[in-house]
Amino acid sequence: MANGAIGNTELVIGGGNGCEILDPSKASYVVKTFDSFMSCVKTASPGQSVCIDEGAKIDISNVPKDTVVRPNITIGSVRGAGGLEGGALVYNKLNYGRNYKTCFISSGGLRLVGLRFIGPDPSVGPSAEYAECLTGFRFKGDKNFINNVEAAGWSEAALQVGMDGFAHFKEIWAHNNQRTGYGYAIDVQRGSALIEAIRFLDNRHHVAGGRGLPASNYEVRFCLAGYSTNTQFDMHGENDSVAWGNKTGSGTNAPAGGNVLVHHNTSDQKNQAFVGIRGVPSGMVSCYNNLLANAGADKSVFIQRLENLGLTPYVKMQVYDNTKGAIVPKITATEPSGQPLLVLPSGLTVPIPLPDQPAVVVPSGLTAEQLSNMAAKAAEDPTMWLVAAALFAAAAVVYHSIKE
Image 1 (tube, rainbow, N blue to C red):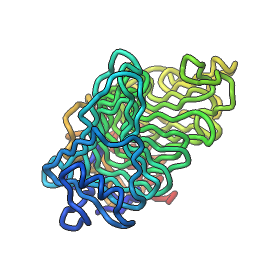
Image 2: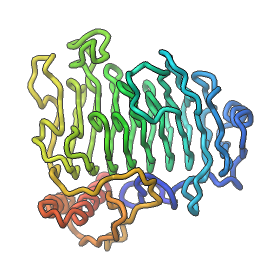
Image 3: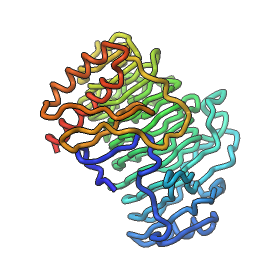
């Protein structure tokens, strides 16, 4: 398998065939039932692994709230391998009434690979708290790695980074997490996250960030952003009023994140804001080299809400080198089995961030700036969207191979 370093790896947007799995023949435990799964994740030693049998759909509806799994273990299955669906953890019961529940908490070093993780609530719902608000996994501590996972149907958040935690999310199919007022595929709550090669569809926010200190930090790159019911990539902040969930009211010391990077992504949405920063970050927000169907002005596509603070955008936020009004094929609910690759003559490979298209060869020996400029020019022609996407991806590879 590729080692995950940008510049010498292959990314499959949304995961599937060819991505990392947990081979049952090499796993410490293979489980098919709820009781055996719970026993293993609470007693496994560091370095051990728990594989969900390929044909199993383990009902976790009765999992105790805030179940802590052992540190430095792997939980997974075989999603996508040879066309297999992969084992699943399934929460089948939606209780009505106001209640908040997180199913599993990692204290650090948790690897989730090749797993399907399905909640009971794929719909928008009539209100925020008409039924319990469920979060699937919360990641605390360091070195959490989530790869080739399907995460769907969670009313509050499918995957959440807790305070001071760090998680690397890679090659995930994240969809139908869209409860009114909540509905986050990935929620960074005053922790930090690297988010790459995700296929997002039918979430309220594809990624959300929590306001306050310590600040929430995230980088989103090489992702496909399909339909969302609200701003696609969001960060709560001190501009929010009490009505917007800020208990102390707007203007308090609750920065809108720390450092936020959103770059080299593709969105098919023409009328939805791509990025929404609800206040002033403690660090810097940078949005660049994204390929967007939305043709609106920068400040309506990359929104910074400052009206309650008496400020004018942008403050500690920069937006540049994005292509808007591009012809982007619709991102659909068909689960990906793998994406084609852009092949560079240098031997580097990166994904084309658009599905079901043949590979495109890009000249070698160009700088990241030259490739980005070529991409922007190509994107002016509606028939050249594939070439534009390939050039953006190539620019990212050259840039990161130099940086890293």
